[in-house]
Image (cartoon, rainbow, N blue to C red; front, side, top):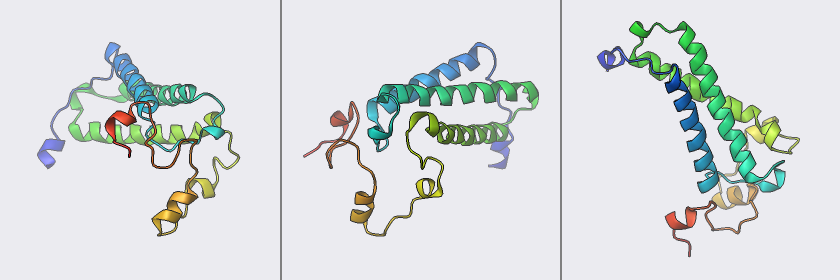
Length: 157
């Protein structure tokens, strides 16, 4: 494992390749969030339409990726770049994107508890029924899988 992590790895995040990466992240995030609606969405708290919310979230992820990789490229020695450094950079990037999404909640949601501990760290009961009833539901009925294409993926009785 140690020898694998210390192998040389090409630095690919420069020039046109960096813009292609940011564009790919934007398109994939937008499509995935809009088409599959992967999380329970409480639309009553949205300040914008769901598509606009998906655009904002995809833009946040793409912008953070573009900025992080551009800044990292200024300090990277291409000849000394290794697999382990690439993995650490990607981990750092994912943490930054998650933080950006959390901070972006203030733009997207009209909720005074956006940054409260109550909202960020929910305490749920051990009983799954209580857990389900405590969680805010969207305007979709219980038992249906949300998302544009979800009815093709999961059979619903």
